[in-house]
Each structure stands twice: as structure tokens, then as C-alpha cells.
Length: 439
Image 1: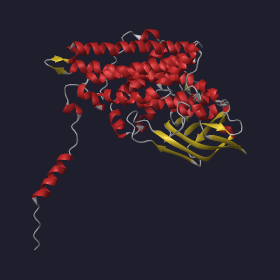
Image 2: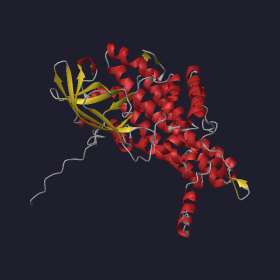
Image 3: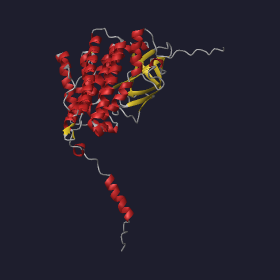
Image 4: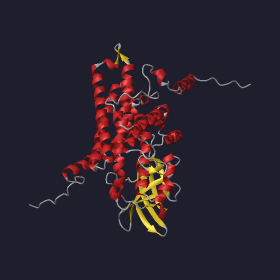
């Protein structure tokens, strides 16, 4: 009879340590019962100057509809997906049911919202989750709008209805590894062949690209040296999309690298309205207005979270909201948000009246992201240790705001766009160096 081997003390110690470290983390509501996590989203207390009074009844209805969906459907799951850097595909039908994709486009199954209504809808999405908002922004205000404004009637009828329902997804490929702010110098090429075009090149940081059904790609026409636009199908031979890993912000957004190796695009999928880089400005003018509302939504969510947290959390026998320093920070956050809201609202009205200039759009985006940065930073301070946990929203928003500060034109580039407009002097490129004198 074989006697079982006796476990050594070292082996038993290893087993004990293993079982200890394998324990799941405590649910945050158990670990920290004194404050409510963001999975139960706070009520909106950040619209202090009552923006609703400036909205139409339709715009208010859109705002409430989106707010209810985001708080009920997205808030409970967003932290889990953000931590895993995965996109929550389960919410796409719920976002599609909101009928906000396509924004301002009229017809073809699109909602035909006012610019203000579309901006308000995006802000309400961003208030709960910036990644979901960026997903819709790329899909709706970039890719769909390009087809809507610069596509043919056949292309609009073919692509927009399913994109509006979110039964198919799109992305927008402009940025390249070597050309970000200097996007007009892009290198991806389009060569005319019989029946279509051959695309060769590379794109980077393209949101939604890893699962998009339709890719709007910009490339340089080798015959004219001008920028043209194309609609590429996800299964096109020679197309490869891979996910960019290790991001610290907008972690749910699936940004990708796109490789195009002799990708054939039929003539009917060339966008007839894109014949130079300037044509992209027709899309970017609208999308930059929309982007100016993302930091508004993020800042509102952070304020709402901090407002509730400070009233729930107690130290030294009193709620944190009772301390003067905390009240000062909270009021500074609220002040920033009111100013941001009014800038965003005025920007929408300028666009709707046909008066908005590129410099005004750039100022709205750059200034709002700067103020949101300050607001979110103050919120991180107010939550103390919980300010670095995604469970309480602020840490996640803190990280998510960084890429928004950069995309759709960095803060510096947008500032220079406004600077050029008000001075008449461009300053994007350094002055050429003069040769040194031999004297």
C-alpha cells in the first residue's frame, strides 16, 4: 500500500498564499459604503444657468431621451469594459434606438436634428461615457457626414440607412503615422485603373476601424496630386486593421492601424465631392462643433459625481461638502461648465445661421477642452483616493479627456487656426532658417 506523500510546510504556505491572492476584489459598494459609485449615475445638477430654456422642445426631448438611456443602460457596465479596453457591442442596438446617428443629415433614415440638438445628444452621451460618445462622433459626425455631404445620391441611398440604424458601423481614415496635425500632406495614394482605383498606404489612430463595415479613406490622387475620398468595404482584399494597444484614455474606443496594400475600390465608391483637402473642411466644420461639446459632457458628469460624493462622504464629523476649500473647487468647476455650455450653444447658433468661421470653431474646441481639463483635475482632487478609481467616474474621465484635448486638432493647432484668422498671419510652420553670414 502506497503511503501518500506528506505536504511540506513550504507547499502548504504556497497554497495558502495562492488562495489568498486569488480572492476576487470586494465590490466597491461593500469596500466603500459611504459613497455611491458611478454605476448608479448621479442626477444632473451641473446645468446651473438652465440651458434648457435656450433649447427647443425637440432638443429638450432628445436631451432627456439620451440621458435616460445612458444612465440606465451604459453607466452600470462602462467601468468593466473600460478596464478591459473592450467595446461594449451589446449596447449598439440601444444606441441605435436613440435615433441620433446621422445627426444633422436629413432623409435616408437619418434623424435630421438641428446642430444644437445633435451637439446636446453627444454631450449627454459623454456625460456618462466619453468612449461611447467618441464611437458615435466618428461614425456619425465624420464618416456618415462625409457620405451625406460629399457622396453621390447613389452612395447616400446605399450606405446611410443602415449606418443610421447602427446595423452597420463606419470609420473615418485621415490621420497617418507621419501626418497628424499636418494631415494635408498625407501619403496614402490612389491610382486610377480600369473600373476603379488602387489604394496603397497606412492610417493610424482610426476609431472604430477594427470592426467597421464601411471605411471612409482619404488618399492622394497620383494623377492630380489632390486628395480624394473613397468608401472601402471591410472585406476588401489587401485591407488590414489592427487594434492599437496600451492606451490610457478612451480605452473602450477601438483605435486601429490600417494597412492598405493594393486595395481595389470600384469607381462607384469614390466620393465625388472630395477633390482636394479643402473639401474635408465641409465635414470638419460640423464635427469640430460637435467635438467642442464632448468636454462639456465630460465636465458635467464629473461635477455631478463630485456634487453627490461630497454630500455623502464624511470626514471630521461632517460631509466633505461642508468644507470651504471643497465648496470653492466645486463652484469653480460649476463656473467653468456654465461658460463652456454658453460657448458651445453660441457656436451652434453661429453655424445654424451660416456665420460660423473656422477660427470660431477652433476656439470653441480648444477653449472648452482646456476648461474641462481644469474641471476634471479639480474633481480628481475632491475625491481623494477614490479620484484614481474608475468606479467613481472621475479617474476615467480624467484619462479620457486627454485624447479629446488632442484629437480633431490639438489645443495648439486649433489656437493657431484662430490666431491666423484674427491676425491674417499663418504661423503653423517655423520661419525658414537664414544661412549664416560669413562675416
